[in-house]
Amino acid sequence: MKKLFPIFSLFIGFIVIGIISCGGGGGNNISPDTSDKIAFVSYRDGNAEIYTISSDGSNLLRLTNNPAVDRDPVWNPDKTKIAFTTNRDGNFEIYVMNADGSNKVNLTNSPDFDCYPSWSPDGTQIVFESSRAEGWDIYVLNVDGSGAPYRLTYGDGDNRYPCWAEDWTIAFSSNRDGNYEIYIMNATGGGQTRITTSDATELYPKWSLDSLRILFVSNKDGNNEIYLMNRDGSNWTRLTSNPEDDTKPSWSPKDEAIAFETYRNGTNSQIYLMSNTGQGQINLSGNNFEEFAPSWSSR
View 1 (tube, one colour):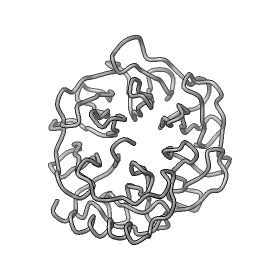
View 2 (cartoon, rainbow, N blue to C red):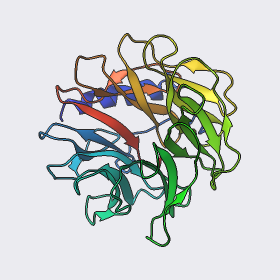
View 3 (spheres, rainbow, N blue to C red):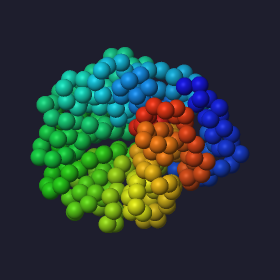
């Protein structure tokens, strides 16, 4: 993991001298901070495990140690817990653990697949996708275990990859109209509105801190690339341009930078970083292991 240190320092230097322009968080510069961490999945120890690392490249910590697949880590708002997906009980379930990897708790306990968690702004609920009905739909659960998960989407097609905004709006992908497009809805499932209308596939929406913009992935130009748009679906800006797939973006805590998963270095995915305008793209992983699904703390 030592390869991360000089690479990340170079990235921080780029930011300080002004590569990054105004982002959703107001354009403040990022400084190396050991409290600002990135959770990610790596095969460096033989199977998919979850790790964290400080944004200055220090404090690498392995959080899971299980022969099962652990994936989709996402931080709660106060950085004390991480929700994730695992099949350690035979099928994929939503778990939550402390930020140091302790106290892992199964929140779903369903015979079906439950995946891709996202925290509510106050940290009391998690929205997730589930196959417990016909196809994939989106549900909400209470983190304290009270009540049954509440279903938000119904009808034709699959509804997947939910992401909660600071204003409580939920973005998600659905193929109910034929191909996967980005939709938004309120926290109880009302007001479901399609905001993209392309002939391509749009996946993995991620809200900016001010709830006004959305990062997402589209293959409209031939392969998966990362784009940014307004919350109404207008003003698309392409941030990556590579023959290989770029996917699963994650905002930094102040929206100044973006971590993402890419296959541009060969068959194994790697985690890259870039500015919020797509500049300064560098390899954070810097190894030959498969690493993916980055999640910046508090996002």
